[in-house]
Length: 497
Image (cartoon, rainbow, N blue to C red; front, side, top):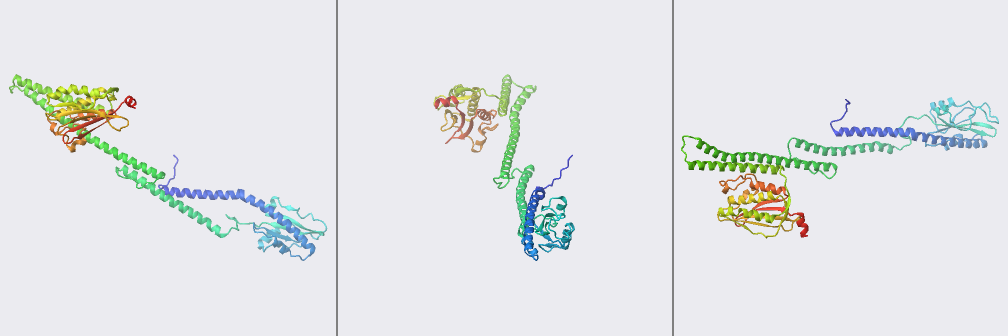
């Protein structure tokens, strides 16, 4: 397996990468200078050296033609150049070397070592031992760094030669003529750039460590951790997303804890609700089966009737619990049809009128008789209204009145209808209002009247599946109201428009 060398800190990784890039850039610069700049500069220097050597040879020839005592060294110095160190040397026939500047002994010996011997006498013709005119292009001369050689020609013959020679130079990263402030600015610029890059990365690393700290705290279970002031850049956006993710995790944890609490409460409520009828059935059965207990036929019939009622109560509880569970799990599919909610409510109310009379209660319709078209499952909406009316039967005292009304909700888009089931009973305790639609909620006054305690929870789930909402509120001065809202069908909305 290939081994990777990585630092545990991004800071050192970044510093190493910065150093590698700096070294690579320097090597590339040296390579470019050596392969491109240096050959071009050398060619330009050779061309200029050839021109200087030719002009110098012509000028020395003209000066010697006027006077044998001409200032040869002054002529050489006048053609001296600093663009690239080039030594201009003149060697007369006597073998001396006259240069444009003082030369170290080793330079003078090297120059004399490869110069041809001078002619014995000045003749009237060119001596063949002198090189031809022009720049030197052979390999040996280039090795000796001879750039150009020109003879000094007089009418009487050759009076010597002018040589343009480039002394050997040491390797340097920059030209010798570069001013020292520029040389000093290069390392300072590199240090400043490197320092600025490291400082910026330290700031970047600090923000990354804040994200890492958040992740560590969330992993440890601290869902209250947040990145303070994440910023608006890319890292800030990542921090904001992590904050939102942590908030979502906290909300999910709260929901799970609430669901677990409700589950435990549900098990406790089911155990309590089933325990009461089971205890009654168990007691009646033991009484009927005990030979030592005398039981008349009337008592036996009453006991059996109580067993039947308790079994019906258990069956009701189990059926309601199964319905609520299927509704919450989405296992019940709604058969939606376009129906008139007003007609459905009035028909259900008519079916309950006799039961209300038997309980000494009144049931009235106070809303308009206009049609209210919705898209819904009619059987489930009948179940909703039945549960609301049964709930009213349980806790509205004798002589009370239950009023139904159905009307459009004003200023809502899309249009909605609201069903209100109101009574003049004792109302809900204020502290119980948020829990009216919870499982097994029953008002204290109704604890002895039976019922599963799941009716309003089933109402809420059915309305939720229809895209509606429910709420409970107390009336003034007395009474309570259950409000149910459902969206109107699209056909109704377009007809009204």
